[in-house]
Figure (cartoon, rainbow, N blue to C red):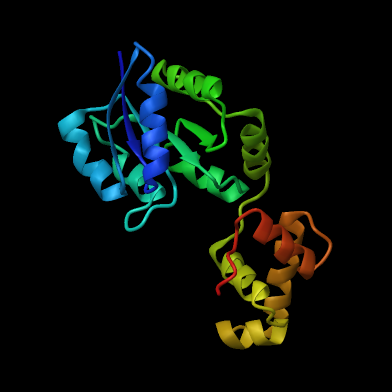
Length: 206
């Protein structure tokens, strides 16, 4: 019997998953919670084998739950179940300890395969997710300073404005921008911003 806990802030998702998984005799749905806080609080009580975890929830999000579980002897194996599939979302979830990564439009068959694979000690990533993860891992990581500059590029700042904002010379800012362009494998700063947005490296603030 595989004991499953569901953590998602959408009631319809929780109800649908509970109903679907509850039909299988080898699965026991222990319950469902609407937040990361409740997921962490429920672990000692329910002791699930598998935690189906949404990434975006109010308060403590999925990534914070994953990080909180690291090193815990009673930690369940986690399968992320989300609507988000940017390279960075996948990379950060896996880096934080996720054993599987599914999108919410996944099939019932794929969901069951993931639960059984992860419960058996394996990892489970659908081909599209695996390809994005491989691409993200293969790309050299940006430094903290480069990530900072990428955020400013996304706001439309020039090299001189970036230099002023970070108290560095325009020449140093230009060197950082060129390094970002090289690491992202793009041709110019505009393409760097577009790629960063597509891959979830930066978010446009409203």
